[in-house]
Length: 324
Ligand SMILES: Nc1ncnc2c1ncn2[C@@H]1O[C@H](COP(=O)(O)OP(=O)(O)OP(=O)(O)O)[C@@H](O)[C@H]1O
Ligand code: SF4
Ligand SMILES: [Mg+2]
Image (tube, rainbow, N blue to C red; front, side):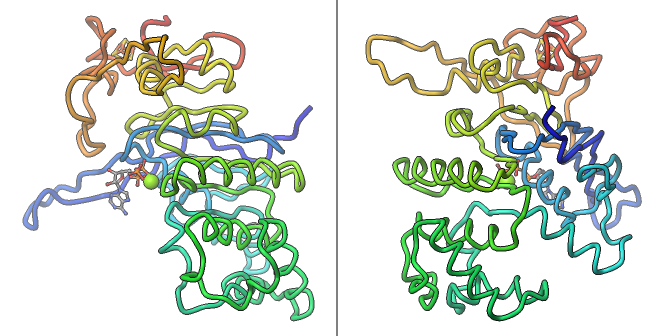
């Protein structure tokens, strides 16, 4: 049986804010609001949802850059919900194991540093000696189809796709088990997106990596995902094997996201589901099912009772009153 590498349980990240300078009462942005999933070794969990649904917040909480309000995160059987409880040496070991690649390959690389420093400095912080650092930098550059000579160049001397490959090389250098890609291809041209995704798939096989791959549309993650979590306003509304999400979707929101994927056949006409209204903010989520103001299938009661994520088929979970 495939090992559970990461287990996220009932995770909440709520940001406090005040309505005005004078208000005494604190209110909350429910950015991540009760998220649970398991990431297995060597597999990819695609996380998809519209802007503001909490994808980045979820990724940042997993790498401990944001403190969860509630819930837990386990790496294998080690509780890493707050790694700052551990002594520095242990904490650094966990930090090596989970790396992140950011969306913007332009701003995520320091323009004043050569690649040798961009990739080498984190290794130095983790106490890796000069000779091994040099070997690892040369190796990861080759793995992402660059050369060790590129190590002397600066980020501005590369194209967008190459810069994203530099970001991938930097994350690989620490030999992680899990890489979180926060929309790693969204800023790239479509043809380059496919190249970077294929590279990630190849590296996954070479290093038996597990990925959490964040995207805002279902087209991007189809080929890389084993399982997919569809998020809406801080919650997972559908979680299933990738094949089931595309062939047998259940939640009305997933259906709407799928209908937005263009079909490359001019004879076939896809019926696009246009969602009514604007995306409500996580500051004031709607009552009951938070999707109800935009849901084409809503019925009485949907605005009163919040549906919970339930297994409705084997390994297929959804949060919708249409399914019991
Ligand atoms: N530090 C913060 N303080 C207060 N609110 C925040 C903070 N970080 C994020 N938020 C809010 O939490 C919600 C979720 O934000 P998040 O960046 O996780 O969304 P996202 O799904 O990654 O969106 P996008 O697709 O645009 O990147 C948003 O409403 C955002 O404004
Ligand atoms: S619970 Fe109701 S409003 Fe929510 S997705 Fe299901 S049918 Fe639509
Ligand atoms: Mg984001």
